[in-house]
Length: 143
Image (cartoon, rainbow, N blue to C red):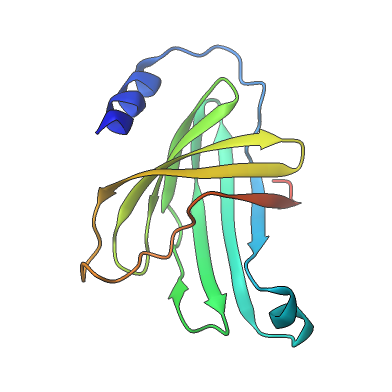
């Protein structure tokens, strides 16, 4: 619940300077070294973010190694606001509709993503939304 209060505060805070640009396609290879060596397909997470002023929109996706489980996310499944050098984002699972709150911080060509809280559970309840927890993603394409 404390994260919801933080989000409300951040959404109301005026920010005049946006030193950090989060626009880009950010990816993470989730495969182990052995899976990469054996050319196992899938095993990738992706955020595609577009920043306009302090607003962020975009999409995300995640596929487990071997393509066993997918969250195709989709257009409009990521929304957020930039406050200073942090992006506060909501992410909707295309797999089960779960909604999570997270924050991202950019350092160079690395995006540090941190899952904060689940705002709405997905359905069915025991199904994983397949949204990244805490990890770093690299900038593949600058938008």
